[in-house]
Image (cartoon, rainbow, N blue to C red; front, top):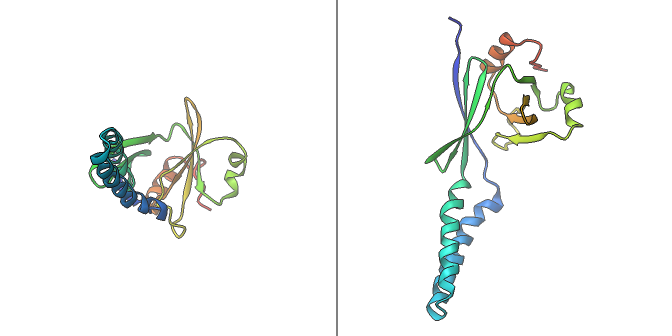
Length: 165
């Protein structure tokens, strides 16, 4: 019974530009409502802006939860600490290579046109690992922030696919 279960919560750093979007949207909606008092047709634009803000603004604050169970990694996105959505699942069977982002083991993959998926915090101080996964639609270049315990367990399961230097 050599099973491992780990959860990692990674909060994405919100870019400065996105921090300005919420107040700008509120000001725009308020302006459209005031203008709608003079020109009733502008109410349609105000309603559309309010609906767009309702659906898009919660997606500014994102946390990623990595769920690692026996070599499989499931990644959920948590929007504004309220809504959870499964965004990706990766298995050891489909794993091509896992290495630190600056590793020379990834040089041949950087030259290819791969789909890049970033599930990191965006903080330059955190160590980022790249997972190259063979999927039905092609290979994916996945950026993750993994712990030493997960890396050791993955290396135990597939030592030739995991590069830790």
